[in-house]
Image 1 (tube, rainbow, N blue to C red):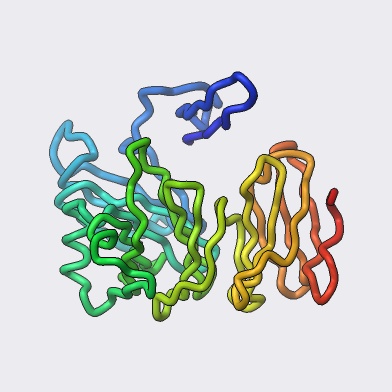
Image 2 (image 1 turned 180 degrees about the vertical axis):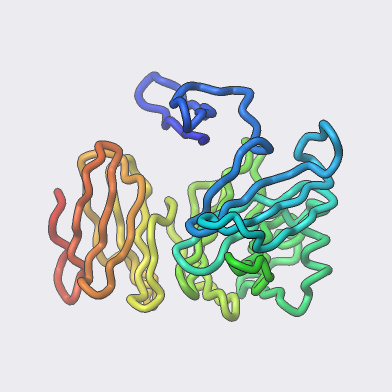
Length: 269
């Protein structure tokens, strides 16, 4: 497990590797030795060359988490993509547009590629490729090229998928939300997305240590802003009850009523 400890007052930020079985620091831990579970699927990164690091010629194998039955396998001749989970039936593969892997995937699946409405040739060539694949089959469904370039400080880019809403996180504390089906840019804000629901047309995000904001996708406006007791770690919409559940670093779960012409309740304003 990789944990990120945010900087606070005079204490610097930290990115430690932790052995999830012992709970102890493990700086030499390798992803090549781990099976990573994404809900009903177990995934393993496997170098195809003996004693080879995960830099090229890597295979990603997925099996059923309950039975161990093979589901799918993907081979990447160059750097393997980052794999991210979603709340739906898909997984996300993230690649830099300039990487050999990003170029290979775009060439291979041209018919599935969706260009965003804010595309810019210069930035697209240095941007981020997000490949949406089926969780159980590994079959590519969409490829999106977003004009989010890597900064000189590092690469904190990421993405989250909420139905037909794709939230792309940039390297400058920014997030842009696109419609996956056609790549239309819907809204942008500072911070990172915590949760989203295409049916409700809402995105929950955080930009400050204790803050949660809710944005209306149709208008792009912030419809509510609340302050919680500590850092928000995760959130999820419950459409049938019109709630937003938010988990903070103190292991408290807040239930926030979604606005329906009125304010969200349940937290400090």
